Image (cartoon, rainbow, N blue to C red):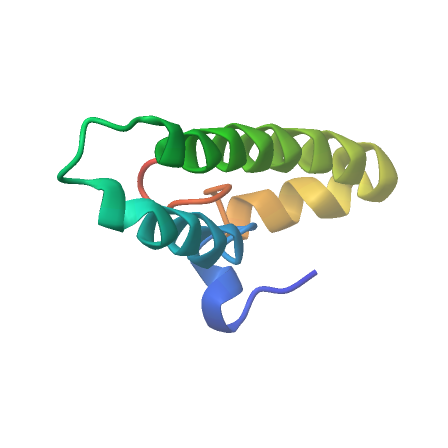
Length: 83
């Protein structure tokens, strides 16, 4: 279990660049009335947030008290201070 580097900020911090990349990929459509390019950003965000919760549940059952100790050291799932 990682408690150093980026992983001291949140348990799934590596999801942030993925969500940002999908947002910047659809950014050229910002000035238009098209909403379809943003579907991927919304889809990926929902997918990764759900995955973070499922992963936490799976790790809690696998590691038991060690997972609780880890969660005390790294309290956030994805975004520090928010989620």
